[in-house]
Each structure stands twice: as structure tokens, then as C-alpha cells.
Image 1 (cartoon, rainbow, N blue to C red):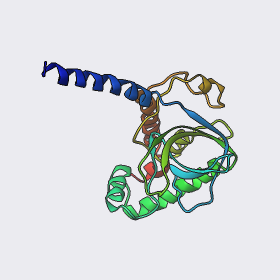
Image 2 (cartoon, rainbow, N blue to C red):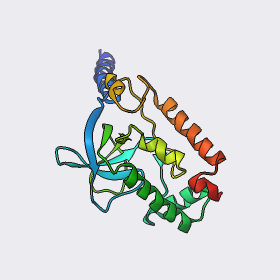
Image 3 (cartoon, rainbow, N blue to C red):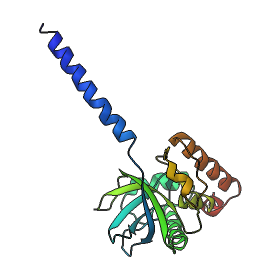
Image 4 (cartoon, helix red, strand yellow):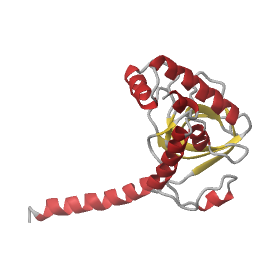
Length: 203
């Protein structure tokens, strides 16, 4: 009898956990239309403040890409990035500023943000969320940064099976998993390296 009680408790615990896990994995995508970049100090090529139509300001981090840093706050990160991009640390910061300028120009017109509000770590005091960003011309920022040689394919990929994707300006697949999402970005990075575009021309 005493052995059955703990077993029953474990069973109930597991049954309670499974719905929570499924719910977290299937978290709904949210769409923020006609967003604008917020005029704040916190800004990077792949991570920036965004003002929604509601007037609220969010901090978003792009899925799947990593731009060179723009400051020296984390020395170990600068060293790791410089090695991977194949440039000196001082030069890395210059490329980081170029990536930031590229993002500002790319998002000069109102744009759309897709997010599940999955938190991403960062230096911002506000919560930072992973997102896919599509500009007014229907181009994805993550892909554009890699094509310009201003980012590497890195980090977490996005996955979805959502009907609203077919309503976007960007030609997004109806369904995708994180592995396929990253595979495409890695292929684009390889092409940029072969053609020695952007930062890859310094290798």
C-alpha cells in the first residue's frame, strides 16, 4: 500500500506536466503590424527596440542570426565572434555598427513582427523576445543580414504550423521546423562566404 501511494503521486505529477509542456511548445504566434523602430540607446543589428501601434515598446531579438557586437561589454563574446567571423576584435565592432545601420535602413518604413514572446537573454533591462521581422517590401531581416554578409547563422531557429503565414507579404512556407529554418540560413551564409560578401571578404 505504501509503495503504491508514491507511484500514484508520480503518475499524477507526470500527467499534470505533459499538458504544460505541450502548451509551451504550441505557444501561439502573435502579429504586430505597422511597427516602427524606437529611438532608444539599446540597438543592434539583430536586437532592437520596437514601438507597436498600441504605443508600447518591445525589445525583439531575431531568430537564427547573430550580428557582430557594437560594444565591448562582454569580452569573451567579442573574442568568440572575432574568431568565427575571421576579423580582429576592433574591426568586429566596426562591422557591428554597419549591421545596425543596415537594420535601420531596412526597417525605415513600418514593418511586421511575428513573435511567440519566447524570452531571449540580453543586456536590456526589459524582457527581450525572439521574433521574425518582415519589412514593408516583404523581405525578412534575418535573411537580408546574412545575404549582406553582416550576420552568421546562429542560435535558435523558429518553427510554426500557423494558417496566418500565408497572409504575409513574405513567401513563408506553410509549415517548418527549427532544423529546416536554420538549414536555410546556414546555406545562405555559405553562399555569402563563397562570394566574400561583407565581413566574409576580410577572411
